[in-house]
Image (cartoon, rainbow, N blue to C red; front, side, top):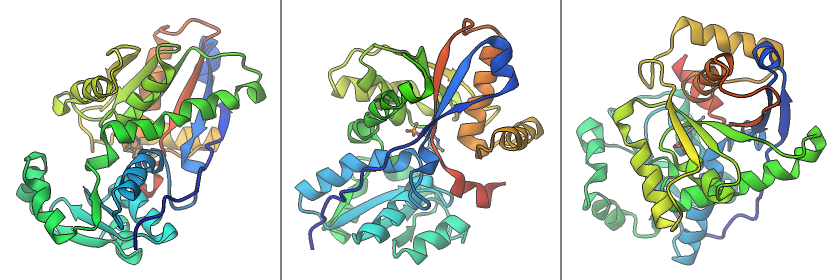
Length: 305
Ligand SMILES: *Cc1c(COP(=O)(O)O)cnc(C)c1O
């Protein structure tokens, strides 16, 4: 049975975040809580999937196939969506079988899993990689790693509208820029597309320098025929993607205790720590108003830390 595009358009709430280091610098921050859109389908991964779902439906596919690691927020959101909206899903996993809380959810929600090993997973960038899987699952539409590419970015463009609609409730007439965690850069590219130069987008990059984030953002903007500007990338990985140091852990505990906002260590906490550094260095003038995207990912916290 062909996939029907889910008529589900969750809106992420925009909430002020009051912290000492912001107040001291006279900077105001509001958080777009993608972690609150749903109890199971969390964060930017739902928005990144929406246009892939439209394409799959147009192509007459039954469901989606994609790939990720054993803690993947992307596969988790995809499997949860498949379960909720009754379409089949398949997941190609990196490494050898391991039963993390994430993988147990994928199984429970009926995602067909295949473990590719490490070498097999590295082959995902080869032009012939998908041929074997398309032959095996001819009715599933293939989604690139993390839900990326131009469709993924276009699905995130709605976030700009969602935030703008809620500014008045905060008493804000306008804002001075966006701040968010970056993995592939797809979500950032979606904000850049929607802003069309109106406000800058600052990306705190959670992966080490050689992961080609800048090239991926450029490629998406080029595909959309949009100038390669309106954003800034800065390193926020703290020595490696999976590296979690004591200062980071303390930052998460303190922030959650004083604001009630939960963070996971690999993306959102590193992004906010990088923001604190810039704010303390006086990068943003007093009176600046920034929007932070809480990209979710809290499910991955169960296994990692
Ligand atoms: C995947 C993810 C990101 C990175 O999103 P990209 O679009 O790949 O840059 C950021 N935060 C969280 C919590 C994520 O799960």
